[in-house]
Length: 151
Image (cartoon, rainbow, N blue to C red):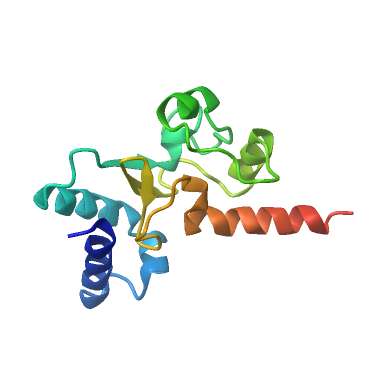
């Protein structure tokens, strides 16, 4: 079964079990459970050998549950996730400000990476750059709008 169908089925199960009302809500409180169950299902289907969970704090400097981390670990990202680059128009310094302003820290979000593509409940087709996941896109779009509004 293709990954996007496995994810769609898992989203449907979360909704049927009243664990969330939609994929957005899964990503706003149940993303850890979703990611763990997705990895288990991928393993069950024989597709999980390359699957791993990634937490926002895996990409940041400092200790995992530090509430005031605010900086992306560029060395680690370049080494472990070379496709993860700031969106067009943003630098790593901008991304650090965004991480600080939006409180990216331990437990903020978790998703699954399979063969270099990033997946969560709202991105069943996956994306090449984690910053294209809807979780990040919402923050990035708000950040860019706020920056554009400043004269």
